[in-house]
Length: 179
View 1: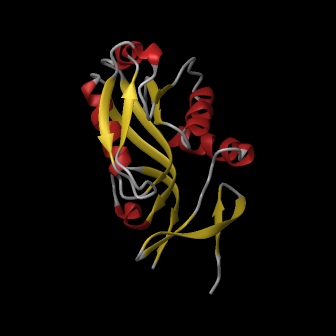
View 2: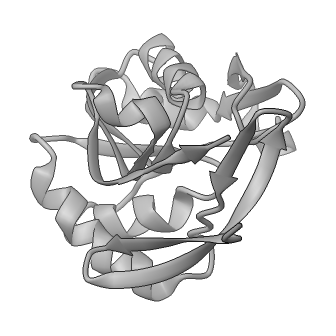
């Protein structure tokens, strides 16, 4: 059995290792962190597909470099990150719980109260590396809406498995799930 999946996106090729995440699910592990070439190649492609947005929001951690680069392409001075834990500097954070395909435990997403103020009333694009089950994305969307932001776009480099059938997300390539 082949132990990798060959991904072609934005003119780049990556060999992704196949990793078992549950008894009946194997994923092609796409790790964007540290892949400057991939971030630089995909961010402009995603940015050009977005509707008009005021702010970019991503969840910690793998979507951060992409959110950074998309915001730079769009000439934004700032982007916002929903952290996975409450930090002392946050004051009174806004919190949303989430369980995703790549984590074994329930997690939380938190926005600093200053970020909540900055997002309120703004058109928001949610940016991530991969959209799979959509649970993390849904939690991020709920968090942004609780902050008073209006989610106008949900975008990722890859749509994994059945996420590719969704018509409410923007993505560059499909990524299959394996069993």
